[in-house]
Image (tube, rainbow, N blue to C red):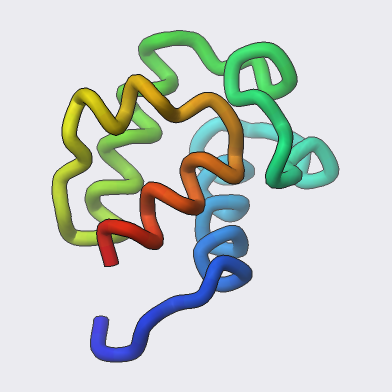
Length: 83
């Protein structure tokens, strides 16, 4: 990826991943939506999401960083740091 994506671009991509792969209603996906409480992801979904994020960013997320992720905004920030 030659140009740096901004938070809006990352959120758009993340939204399409969540809608297509996890069948989450797009209206539920906001920066402060909690992945587990608001979007009903479980630990297996979280691992799948981490894999998809790593594919998108083409870099690995450290397990320590991944444990800190609770909301959509956290995911966007984590991807932004990887890019």
